[in-house]
Image (cartoon, rainbow, N blue to C red; front, top):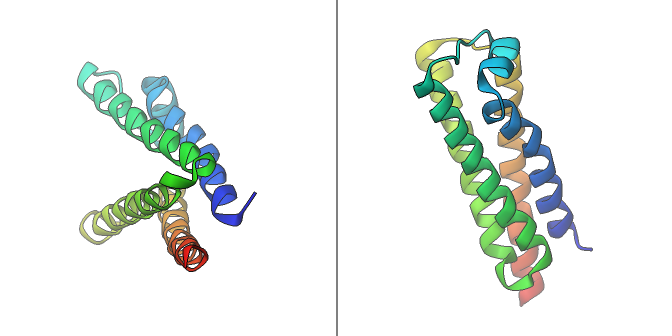
Length: 129
């Protein structure tokens, strides 16, 4: 198994608990983790949609780990996902102030995964030549 394949799988597995914490039982997990009241149907709906987005992309990354033809698109989508989340968190940090420490850790991890993803894209492109 190549490093891009392992990276895609590790990322998909690593995002699974985060996705579940957002959407499996938002009123329980978000209250426990971040003191967020997610009892409203609208808030629960939004967080379950976010969970669905995480799982959809994680599924694509797992497929990319096993199907050579979509490996590069999976890596690109991973980088776009991580950069989008990271920049959104950075914007919030600037505009809203310091959030819960775990959300800062998520932002740093997203930046790191984006950088590694770019390295994996470069590796795949070199191997294809």
